[in-house]
Length: 75
Image (cartoon, rainbow, N blue to C red; front, top):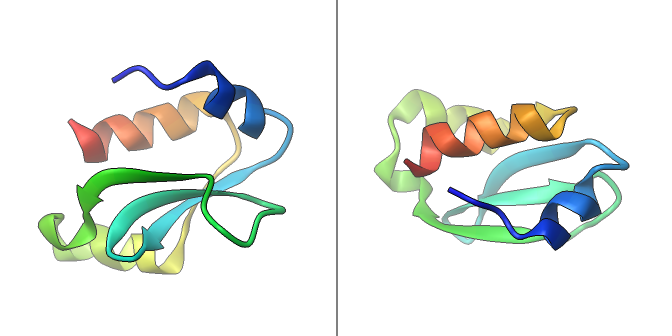
């Protein structure tokens, strides 16, 4: 999956967290109270372990770490 350049550039400076927003897998930048991206995947379709991790928030420090996580969930 390819991500819009603006999304990648907007998260380069800070860490980010994957979680759940309104039932969907979502991405937050550290300083934003609202997600900067909501993906077309309902967390309920994922295994229970992944749902729990997303509820707790999955922290990522690099774009490659984020990309790997998203590819796991969205592919």
